[in-house]
Amino acid sequence: MKILNIKLNNYRNYKNLDLNFNDGINILQGRNAQGKTNLLEAIYFCSIGKSLRVSREKEVIKFNEITAKINLKLQKKYKKTLISLFFSKNTKKTVKIDNIPIKKIGELMGEFYAVYFSPDELKLVKESPEDRRRFMDIHISQTSKSYFYYLSRYEKILLNRNKLLKTIQLNKNNQNKEIEKTIEIWDKQLIEVGSRIILFRNVFIKKLQPYANKIHSYLTNNEEDLKLEYTGIKNENLENIKEKFIKSIKESFNKDLNLGYTSFGPHRDDIKVLSNDIDIRLYGSQGQQRTVALSLKLAELEIVFEETGEMPVLLLDDVLSELDVNRRKKLLNYCKKTQTIITGTDFEYNEDYSYFKIENGQILSIKENKKI
Image (cartoon, rainbow, N blue to C red; front, top):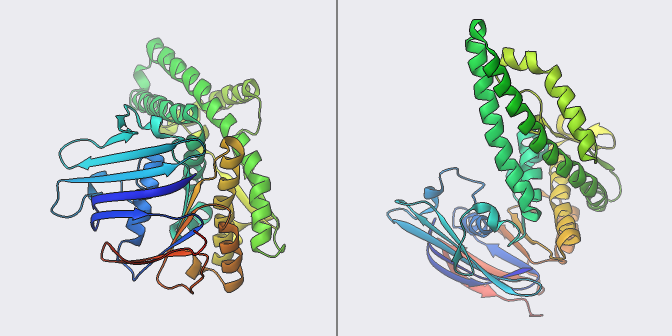
């Protein structure tokens, strides 16, 4: 899979952009705040249907404009695909695939595989469990529309169960059988859908582990061994997961009543990351954490290829400056296996790469890969 062309209209600081990408490594070079990250954001938007930088999508519309557009043309294994996003300050975002509007964002999943890494991705290792759950959810959703549906359904069930727990908590003296029956209904749905999410995650971590460890070993000159552990229910049998989920929900019910929210389930799970058997989140240096996060992201490439036969596009935002010379060389060598788009302020020239100079939302010059 590769990007052939991207067109932007009134997106962030881009008035109009029409850019063709090449095979291999594409370098977006320029000073800070010129639009390099904005371009990567627009590309990734077409993969997952949302921005990782803002929650209010209207913020991507250029200042003093009413609408914005992204058109991304892809070459897949067997066909070409056009993904179009339209933003308006007056209406909801619309998404089209080959000029046909989609009704739900879940229909976009699997159309364009991309892996995105920036300095902010350190959160994947050093910050809260929510960041590691998001990592799992984004990846699995890209390769499974069913998982995306289960996540959406689970969030709604969880919201309703929590509302009911809060109601019971506020009316302890007036509990009745109707309320108890209602909580049982939500429990059954929570267990049914939540168990499927847990199953998907168990399978994902099992696949991720060997790839991540191999890449991490490569980046660290075989000095560090990486291990991943899912902290939720560990099982690859759906019925066994359900049994354990039922037991845990019953055991935590009184605790949930006191708290006013659901304390057990996939919404509370995490990934434990160990390097040489040391918890890297608690005891790893920032350099170690960065290498682990990068290893996890690169491992995504391998899993997507294994599951779909398509190699994702790799998006690296200002990453090389944070790595030492040896790891930088190793990373660039690894990037050769797929189309890669890298941003930065300064690069040494390599005739195997394609270079695009960006200034104030415009492409000023291009040096193409001589092999193309």
